[in-house]
Image (cartoon, rainbow, N blue to C red; front, side):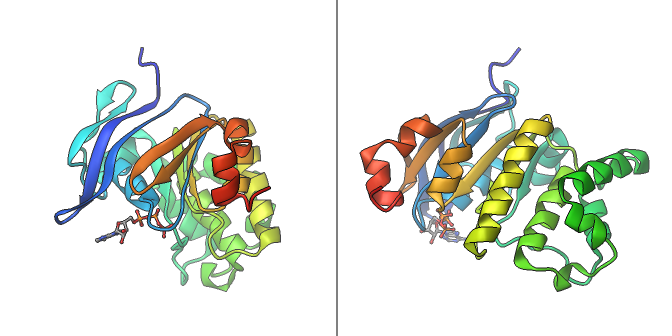
Length: 239
Ligand code: ATP
């Protein structure tokens, strides 16, 4: 049996002739939460998009339970159980909350999706109350819940979250991170989270990487990174 659910080895990628990722090594075990923190432009979204099969890998490998998925299309990667919640939420604003969620269950049976909807509504009771409301009329935090719920409707084994705190007020960010913590405890899945909000992500993470200019420059447990002076100075305001 493969040691890790996801194992990224020496990954290089970029756009046109410009290399953005310069040999990333990273793994996610079953049930683990791994965070990737880094400044604007470090390559965090590119990494997620390569893992999802949206942007192609130039070299290196991406193993899913020991099998290479480096050349798989995005739809196949999603079918294997690797689901991305993209940056900026991107819900379908003129569809109801429930229709948004059902779309995430595409390819699964109605009974399976109904079961996932129940799980989602238990996690996010506010979405149950608003299930017939157009997603565009929700607050930013609620739309983030819809985006996360939509990924959960596909019953992922690895949920990849791209900057879930982006554009949200601090109290709402705290709520979203609290909910991700509940998901970690209650749902049988691993989580890879990419964040500029290093404090919130490191608090949640079992392990974490600091990405800078397309390279993982520091790696350790969430707690180790929180206490690392380099991380404190660059990302935690020196505290
Ligand atoms: P942010 O937090 O600002 O989203 P990030 O760490 O996610 O930053 P990326 O979005 O992966 O960083 O960007 C890494 C580099 O790749 C940047 O220099 C960016 O300009 C470049 N880049 C990103 N997307 C494209 C694209 N579609 N075409 C060309 N260059 C791109």
